[in-house]
Image (cartoon, rainbow, N blue to C red):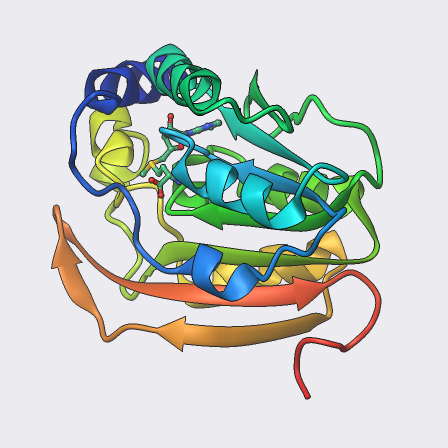
Length: 214
Ligand SMILES: C[S@@+](CC[C@H](N)C(=O)[O-])C[C@H]1O[C@@H](n2cnc3c(N)ncnc32)[C@H](O)[C@@H]1O
């Protein structure tokens, strides 16, 4: 039910101009020629196409999304622009249709808060990342725990607030997935969203070495 509601809402937004992001992950990601990159919740495909240009012909970029409308829009744009080194895959974040250790770089913007099982998503991020790979992820967290009455409300989750967890829960998911080298790149002041108070942040991390925090 929840995933269908999310997919429906985003299919309706696919052709709109409205901004769906909550941070600047792409601006810090620095994809390099030849790298394999993944965008979780790729939406209209804008960040995927930007990364495709950076990684060039020897690299490849996967966009992952659940929404038919978003995937259709992203695929149409890639075809129109003649971008060959991208693929948009329909998949839930908790069970990525990608092999182990494929990604040099994983980005995401304002998507992970929608996932029902956030620990499973972080476990998947760890699984598909290459040794020495990295992530740069923009998302929101709740500064005050989301009230029980909204936590499982699919509409409120699809509005990008009710699915958010507290900062400490968020960090615990990363740690439990195996990420120990983590850097907070940017973090907003708390602000009201729906019936909640949230903050946005962009975090970066690596799988097995501290090359993001010196
Ligand atoms: C707020 S939009 C952000 C889109 C894009 N990253 C951007 O910044 O413009 C969230 C996107 O994540 C997708 N999404 C939400 N929940 C998802 C899930 N559980 N699995 C896969 N995609 C999901 C939605 O379809 C939507 O395209």
